[in-house]
Image 1 (cartoon, one colour):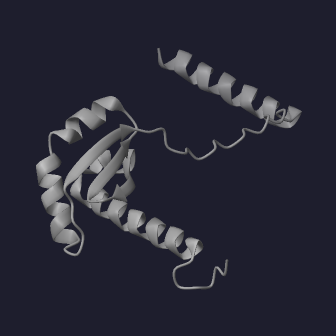
Image 2 (cartoon, helix red, strand yellow; image 1 turned 180 degrees about the vertical axis):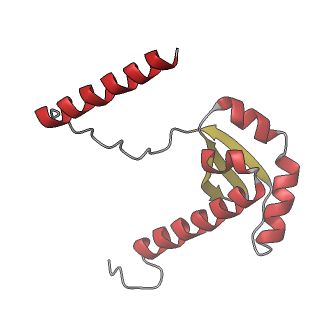
Length: 129
């Protein structure tokens, strides 16, 4: 199979990925700011928009806005047909957390300076009271 052909599998996958990315961008523009990073369009097939959410609670809140969202998607993508929305709870990829480096020991001179500063601060506080 020649992947450079206009209707190759690779080109179809790329086009689908770009479409889902555009749909997700539109979804995030439609939703309130606090929900924007909590969901994504995970599929679009035969007029059905499939949305993925981090939590069932969020999904339930957004589901109440289905008709408005379908209308807004139809305005944003007039060449598409949107007949319904499916909702799924989907764990998304999370960025790996940075690995914490072990703390280096405090040099003796720094320890002495800190002790001196603490003592002088305590003595000032005692003089004030």
